[in-house]
Length: 208
Image (cartoon, rainbow, N blue to C red; front, top):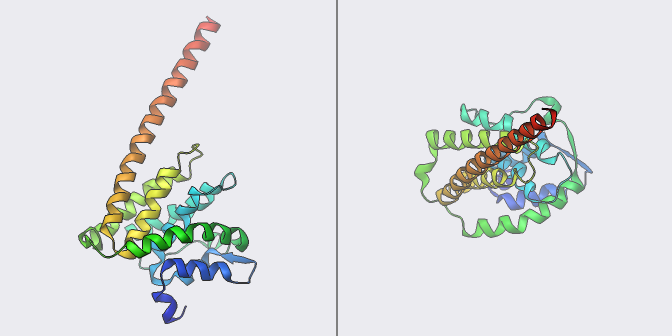
């Protein structure tokens, strides 16, 4: 990565990755291209596509790197690391480019209005709180919950952009969505438990 690429907006870097003629790209290459911004950028790159139509199991595939990356940030690792079997795994660039091209216009709009503000939400403590929130959200993201990954994905993506832009307003929105995700998960769990209890009671009546 050259000096100019390090200062490019994330939307530009994503566009350059998508335009590369090589038919495949690895996670390691993406991390290298994102450079010093990799944690925040990776949070966005792997969370935001969950809002797009994706093949079954895509949320688990995209969420697993987040499960590994967020604890590294939590414990103060300066640069992201992934095991070789993930780092070197090839991704079809055309599929990735299609997702990127749908995300880039929205990302560019956010980049135009976003700016450093409420920066007390970041730093050694603030960044670790964000990392912990992203870790918990990523655990939900990899679960096969119908439509249950959309709110966690949105929160992780916004946390990533907030870190990149040092924009505390985006971080506050992400925290709000995190709270909503927890509430929805709690309600969904209560509904599932109630449904199982009713099914067990029905079976007991039938068998009694």
